[in-house]
View 1 (tube, rainbow, N blue to C red):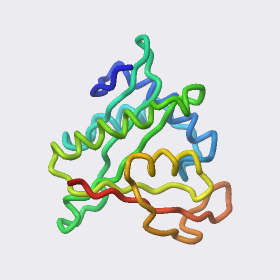
View 2 (spheres, helix red, strand yellow; view 1 turned 180 degrees about the vertical axis):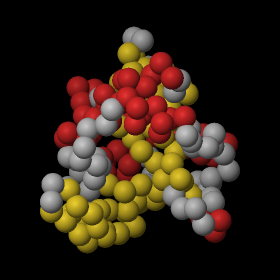
View 3 (tube, rainbow, N blue to C red; view 1 turned 90 degrees about the vertical axis):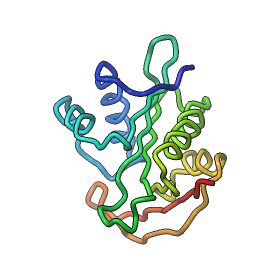
View 4 (cartoon, helix red, strand yellow; view 1 turned 135 degrees about the vertical axis):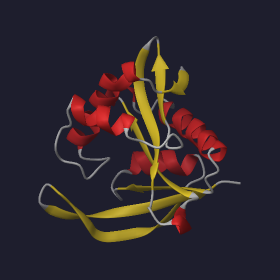
Amino acid sequence: MIVRTAKETDLLPILNIYNEGIEDRIATLEEDIKDFVYIKEWFFNRDKKYEVIVAEIENKIVGWASLNPYSHRCAYAGVTDISVYIQRENRGKGIGKSLLKELENRARQANFHKLVLFTFPFNKAGQGLYNSVGFREVGIFHEQGKLDDKYVDVMAMEKTLK
């Protein structure tokens, strides 16, 4: 497996993997399937410090991860939100852990102090992945967002970089 910086030719597999996450209802509050225009705009309208990386096996993208803005306030300039998405048939194979380790390296290079993420309390596989690389649960926001017309809880997790 190769973990590398994403490039424009990776956008269709990134989009497809993201849409799987939306369909599965375990990784995001997004409900609507995204199109190529959306992912292209997302990819090209990012500050360079908010990197997107991919995991590639035998020339196929099997997962992606990104550093994302956490807050526009300067007090939080050292904090970055993260996203990790793995192709449905490749989940549970260590791809997420490889992506997270590289994302952490890139975050350090960009002078971030902390990584944060938001997940669903019922996403035990995701929590297991994050815990395995040193994230800790901060707490649960009760009825934080809507998914399929129901309010759902969202768990915050963090990792301070040293």
